[in-house]
Image (cartoon, rainbow, N blue to C red):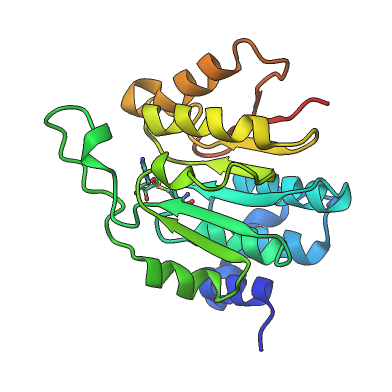
Length: 229
Ligand SMILES: C[S@@+](CC[C@H](N)C(=O)[O-])C[C@H]1O[C@@H](n2cnc3c(N)ncnc32)[C@H](O)[C@@H]1O
């Protein structure tokens, strides 16, 4: 059976496209990967190279430094990033939170008709990520689907919910459950969508915390912190 990273590479980047892109990305690849070359190669032809290189590096750091806890992704859609995260850390529990039916109406501005991200399902995500008892889907409305996980620790949390209220509620839940050295990654930090919802929530939450925001030069403006000791 194909290993998760091989499967991911084959599914996400058909060989022809991967070969065609390789000369274009070679000059921007990390010369000194601080994670295994095999991981780096699975990233090299990703459209958002810098985002996935950063996520890969963070997960590898968590493993190398034995930061305890599960991984979590909030806002999963079709599970492309989830499959990447699971392939990097197959022995860690990966919690996946989404309605798996698009944005909850309650969090959209009045009159907004945003139908994005409805084209998915739990079954589609399970198929893409792989059927492992380490992959735990929590379908439904965040923050309601956080209930029951109060005793968990999280070494790596990726927030990609796009909207202010569930993002702030997630920060309040996860931050105290991330041990020193653990990662909290905010997708869309520099994305003006929803009146800068992600940046507003991250900045407001971190205003009285010791960690500083580090911005990444990727396509969608990711930012992150590592929990202080
Ligand atoms: C940008 S997409 C996630 C993309 C995904 N992280 C990836 O890399 O492909 C945002 C997702 O957040 C989900 N979402 C937004 N608010 C939510 C909430 N309160 N509860 C559950 N899911 C929510 C939407 O259903 C949508 O699938």
